[in-house]
Length: 96
View 1 (cartoon, rainbow, N blue to C red):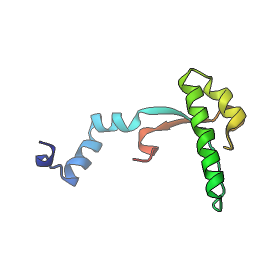
View 2 (view 1 turned 120 degrees about the vertical axis):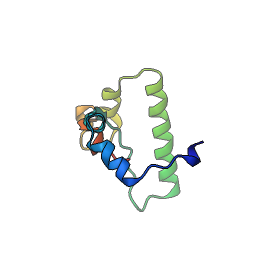
View 3 (view 1 turned 90 degrees about the horizontal axis):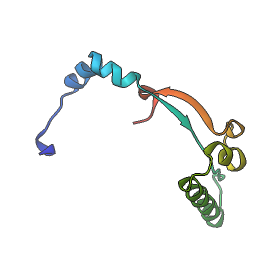
């Protein structure tokens, strides 16, 4: 069924200009991140170690660990000490 549905570029523009489209684009999300950084020249061992660290963090979060505390102690992000908080972003500001 989906293969038969075609939406023109103009239909997309019309929707985004409508009240419903504007409402969806104005929806906001509170974002936070945990960055496990590796240099561009990282060895495969370093990349593997980062993957293991990321998996460990993920497992802790799935078990209910406090995201902000984990971010503050493990993240390489510039906002780590703020619990990884990236603030509020509108849906239109997020990558597709």
